[in-house]
Length: 234
Length: 288
Picture 1: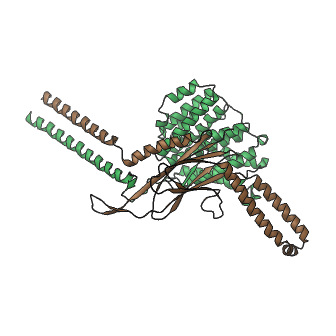
Picture 2 (picture 1 turned 180 degrees about the vertical axis):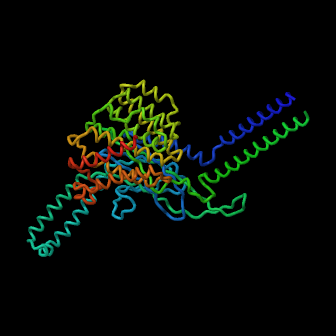
């Protein structure tokens, strides 16, 4: 009786441990998506290495699916002080249609936002961009808008002066003073925030037949882009 | 004896069938995952896609470094006490104070208080293990590397950046973005608290507070996008929104109009006091 009991216990343990091992082996087989995530971890390291000599501050991997219409995904970055930042992009996780990267001063909710940088054909490549030229771009565009606004106001100065019951000369003097104040504000501007927009292109609908059910199912293609940011520590 | 033998045989068969059926279930689950998660998935799902809104806030180390450059002094009893770590029982408290202690660690390092910093690193590891970040700190080497480099500022900073990178990677790999929003908010509040308590107008505290309000707005965006919002998270969001609203209604700010999005403003002493008092109140609530 005791012998029989021991045989069953041993047999039970054998099957239990054996079963667990089979499961463990099965679990060790990575799905294509898990493999993709592992690859992304490597891309992230490369992306951070490209920040050198800037000091690492943060990173974000944006995952997306291609759809039948183009759309965008946005990443907001907060910057502090007048530090120069480097943005490092790694798009090796984009294996299908290439995307576009645009960087703005405001979010996509604002029509008046300014495009500070853009790059087309992003996919299977790496690149870096610094905030210094973007700030120069912002200030330059703001100055153009400021000049345009005051040129128009000065052109209409005579009529406006009459309406305000002051001399045209006085009105022009006031306008120039205001313009100087605005120019001064523009010279003090910094990019407090940056909005990175990833423009995902539309793709054709792709249908395949499910081998098990025989149903038609839409094929969803995915991609991911890594962004790391670093700041000048000097 | 025969009946008992049959009983064992029955138990054995039942158990074997149970194990095999579980294995089959797992096999089915695996195959589902394969369809769901492959890069070329045949199931119309976008649940692995990132949210439409994402953000990258400044690291606790950078915030501490900014305040240090402005003249931030070390006051030994200012950081949150490490003894409190065991009192944080809810996930929210643990996550937010993981951030608080991260800023305290950066504060100690920036002031070259390495013994204290070592204690904060240990407490961060302890809290990290409670909020699912145990893997980040699994490497015992981190503590010994820290202790071996005491006195070497650049090596310690390098180690903290390494920890930050590992934390960011782990959060990204495991879809823990919501956790990162809460922990960054805790880190930000503590950084602001330390600045508000130690800096004065002579150190341009008004300008530093002003520039940090942009970060506050970004954090609000992050808190807003958290999927499972608890009362604690809503409360935190309301608190920071109140700070931002108070800031937006300051006279020094209102006069700039839309250009305020690009300008750091020097606040008056009263305005600094008003904003500082709100930050201090929030921080005291978070560490309770």
